[in-house]
Length: 415
Image (cartoon, helix red, strand yellow):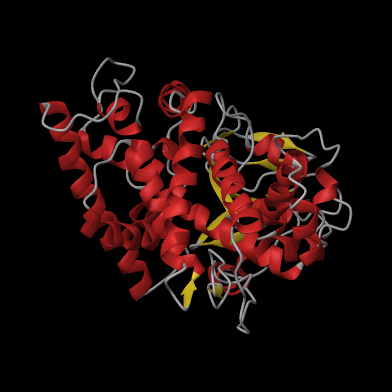
């Protein structure tokens, strides 16, 4: 089988199709081509799209793919920032990744859990005074407070709403064009400027965050040559802690949606079975849309499944489609936490936040943080508060990236 045999989407460019079809773009073509890999054209250039467990294995092979130069500029200007860990490869990536993993110790995750409980208790007390509230917006602010305290970032109360809005704009605008894109770009510029100044104050000794926090460790982190990161890059990396924690609001909204749509699950969760709570969280992360795909470039020519893959080809790995792949999951479009009862796991089959290895590869360092925070939030929603869900549009789009229920989940009569 030679290169010409790879299924190929005809036409000059399919960027608009990607925007129109969102999470389903790659999966639709995998189904129509009956293939886990196909060639297309995006942003005027040849690209490869792939999905499934075996595709994920090859995509996360650092001998075959690199992240440098892969992310489009509009994603760098909103979602990732310049020179962040996501764009590094090889030893530089591993060294920077160790910086992130250093704050993921059991003690720090336990502290994160305690902070999350504290903020939920404060929030519920406030919600009891409100007739109704938009759960998504409230959750973003709770998570922003948690993120700042956990990361050692000092914040004044009157600045919290604006920071929440800016961090939200970064990930809400990642797939947008026009005014929404510029909102995200301006938000990143504002937060990076403020964070860079804060890092300079840490280095001057006028701001003293606790030593185990991201602000302290990232401010004093040295690269492979022994130099401190420039303050702009250190700022990007601290934001790479804050922004993803606020983005967990998307998953938490889907937790609330799942509890509403599958009331029998609430009864199972009220038993206090920690294992079942973990299964439920994992199924929320598998079933609902979060990241649609991740991007890399081919590092060197190689052959895979009889196809010749050429150096420098832009490649998209289908995260949503892999989590809904019938070759991996029984009845993937059915919400069923029990599928995780005896699931031993593969870093290439269950990839809501990316796949591969934590330390050596590009798997999201914040996955443990996500699960820890979701556990606490689930417990509050099921066991520690009552609320009503009035009639509203709870549908969500598989075109909008990221996808959020249209009503952002309105709840009322919290007690």
